[in-house]
Amino acid sequence: MKNNNLEDVYKYNPELKKYIEEYLYTEYNTSKNTRDSYAYDLINFVRSFENKNIAYLKKEDIQEYIRKEKDKSSKTKAHYLTVLNNFYVYLTNNNYISDNPCESIKMPKIEKKLPEFLTMEEVDLLLDIRSSTAYDLRNKAMLEMLYATGIRISELCNLTMSNLYLEDEMVKVFGKGSKERIIPINDIALHALQEYLRFGRNELLGTKDSEYVFISSRHTKITRQAFFKFLKKICEEKGIKKNISPHMLRHSFATHLLNNGADLRVVQELLGHSDISTTQIYTHLSNQKLESEYEKHPLINK
Image (cartoon, rainbow, N blue to C red):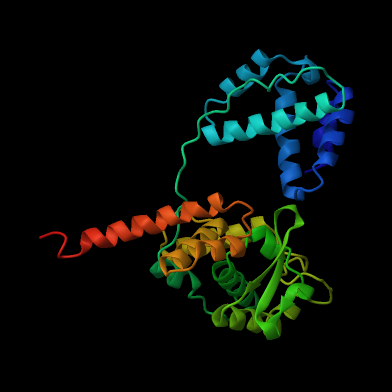
């Protein structure tokens, strides 16, 4: 996010520069993407109150702001309210204001939707890539790694050469809050990664050098956005109709592991979830599969 976006809103109230930048600094344990998201939400919030100092808004002002976001889901509204509440908590804790206007506002009720995942057949179709160019080698390696390890796309893009332990068939990633975890790589993903490192990476780097594993056409670290565009393109080419995202491969990894009898605690560790309740949602997906297969059985339908 460019600084001039923030500078643009500070002109309405110069005090905001101090408030917002100090608040974002306190969120140092979060990723840059998260901090950028917080800043973006606060910018939009400020712009909706151009003639008011947001440090002194009332509960009713916040409620009206959330209410106006009619096209947003309950989950998005809850996210907005969380960001605003954290911001006002920071202001009150530092005695910039006396009361938090968000304190007594109830969170919107969020419908828990089961994450969508790919079937084994769809995964096989997606991963069937002919590796004829350096880009093919990179893209196949990235897809295989996402599905084989369940890591987040941001974790994959930030993977460095020093994070690879290929002889041990392991990879080290840094998740939310810079939490480190070691994840095994299966033979198929390992082979795709080795092929990319052997025949594709140097071609993509050209004369440049980089610590990152996956390189873009600009000879720098590939971005999440660039990979997402590729993923959309390959799904269209292969006729996969689902609204696929890199995160869906993470959902598929977890669901398929549990469907094949993996322990929930093991899946929790692999995904890097601090709370097992986050991982438990995949047991519902597994139960759906079990019920579906149960109902198809000829003995059940007699």
